[in-house]
Image (tube, rainbow, N blue to C red; front, side, top):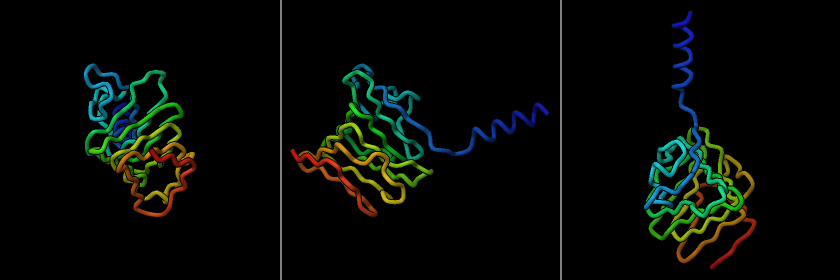
Length: 155
């Protein structure tokens, strides 16, 4: 009986589900580096099975994207939090991958690079896209459907 219970627990834990990656930032010398595993609560860089949360953590250490990132399944930026994509940065959010839950941008995104959003209308955006700032040549590419932008600030 004990062996069956242990086997059942292991089987359930090994199922592929969307995980959550929570930004904590602050690694000395790489405080804002998305690609630094120690800047994430679970100590791994988010990937295609992960829903990313950038919480308003009461400090000024938020992620800066400086390169092409691995795809992620979802992104939430809480009010008061920020994300910056530099000209060489590329972020791809694919909500339908692994049952991703979409996109919620309540905080501020400053985009000088590229943000790709796949399957946008398959999973309705949570809370809308309220604070997206496109600077310079920044662009957002939606592979399907339309997005409603509530506030547009062009700098």
